[in-house]
Length: 224
Length: 149
Image 1 (cartoon, rainbow over the protein chains, first blue to last red):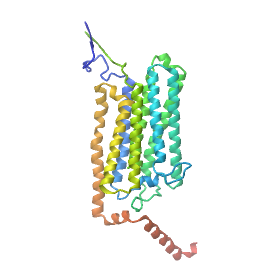
Image 2: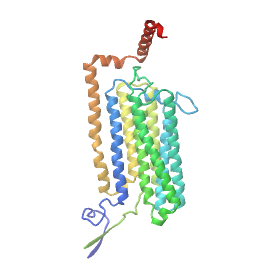
Image 3: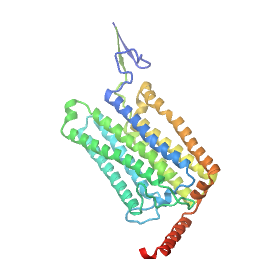
Image 4: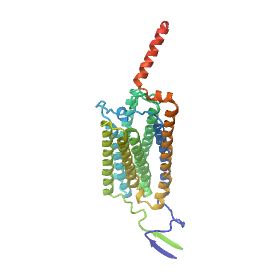
């Protein structure tokens, strides 16, 4: 019987240990996120395919150009605010996960609360934008905007916009709910009793994925 | 029986404070550059190749942001190679998805424009003209059926 300590190139597939070297729940969260990435990818590729097969398309800077309280004529401003809110909430989630590693309960609580506030702020922004666009006459099946070249636009534009940002917003909502559950579990000492905060890491993975999807949605709908 | 304990297992969870700060700064700067490019593209009304090039640059910046989020925030860079591969290899299907589907869409557009002149005429007609047409139609109908109004 030999006890060897190896720092590189162990035989990961010989059995007796996890070949991925991370906890089961995290592996499963990664696989769930991978499948979710394919779902979002399918949506965005469908959007791209329709856009490539259509002669004209609205200019996003003409469509998304309002800011609450400041009126219109401000392209990209509101969506930049939304993007930064989500990036910052992702950073506070990293800090919550880090605090969990250090088993620093007050810090976990603090950063989780900031993350939840960021998520709610993002949802509020999205609710405002949807309401604003609905007032302008845009909805599923209705498109008041014209194409960049002045030709009439199809409802594909609004259908894809509301479906994809709606699906993303639903992910943000479920992320906020998961984070609230994590906060309650932290406050009731569930993780302290377990002896580890691995659950926060899984919630964190999900939350970062939501931010990751927004990077793609933001670029595909608002920038190009 | 061999008993292997692997060094630096769950311990080296990367993500020290400096790394988090650096990645935050990188993500913010990349976003600001993206926004500046988008704003420039809007203000200068650029067309053709330059517009395509700026859009390509924005997509490259988007992929860079995605890399930083997945590698550092989601911590994938600090996992072992088996784990990285099991996530990244399936996602490489996207190369084929994107190329084939977008090519298909573009090909459909070109074929339709070439062989369906009615579609081309309708889809490139100015929206204002159409509205005027509709207005005329309503006007005519009103003339035809005055009793209804």
